[in-house]
Image 1 (cartoon, rainbow over the protein chains, first blue to last red):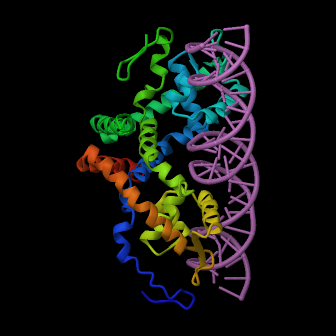
Image 2 (cartoon, rainbow over the protein chains, first blue to last red):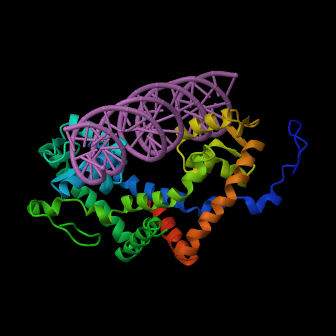
Length: 163
Length: 163
DNA sequence: CTCTTGTAATTAACATGTTAACAAAATGAT
DNA sequence: ATCATTTTGTTAACATGTTAATTACAAGAG
């Protein structure tokens, strides 16, 4: 390594520190998970943005299509969205008339969520296309491989719980 | 009655629309990737925040520890950070004296990045602990399983490129 | 009943994700 | 050289991620 005029005299060779360097970035699990997620989402995003929907907003109304009434905590859990984000998403979706907020009669703290007809309309427009995209992906890789991946991801996700 | 994970639920009400509903959220690949990523990161985050480092900032200086000088485009690519985010991260890291910005003599557009001694000090503090955490994870699941997962993720990540 | 503690949701503040628009420098064709 | 085009990086604007503090209500102990 050649020293440039502006560099310090201290040797900057990093070979001696190799043992202290992090693992190679190319085999980093967090980045690999991020890349894979982005690759998958890139197929869905155009369809969602055509309906002025973000990915997270879609996750919310999708869950409300599966289950009629969901309180905010359960929604945060299922959609994997943190409470502060969910508060903003709910406000936005409600202003757009896509979901409705109800009060829980038994617990004044809880916010109950429900999809509106307008929200259902969006579901019915987006869902078929979403299914098609997913089926293309499943066909390309084979359902077994996707299942294997989902199982591995599930296993990783529960790593914390047995510490 | 509470449904356990793995059970197949089908609420009473929306049966007629079943064909138009999205896939079940619990087997959603994007959410599964998100959950897994968060599970992994939850082990690293406390250590990073102890050094006032975000995950993304850590990715940046980590790459600069592997490779002495990197321009912004290459960094965005390797750290998987979009250009606008990277601009802000670079500004922040530079203000804190952790990295330095240089100008490319051959191309006036490019920004070259280099880690400072202060940055190297952080690397040397964090890296050993980071390795230990990763080794625990690798021991728990077995290196073959991690490798299998990384291979599958890689395969998913390149799905776009053969369209 | 009062007080403490715990829980659900919101707000605040900052960092990043995401897309679009933009400025500056390089490139290539004429 | 001149001009249109492409590439690199930044800025802007809005949505979400992240942690901490806060408010409103619920539950329990005394």
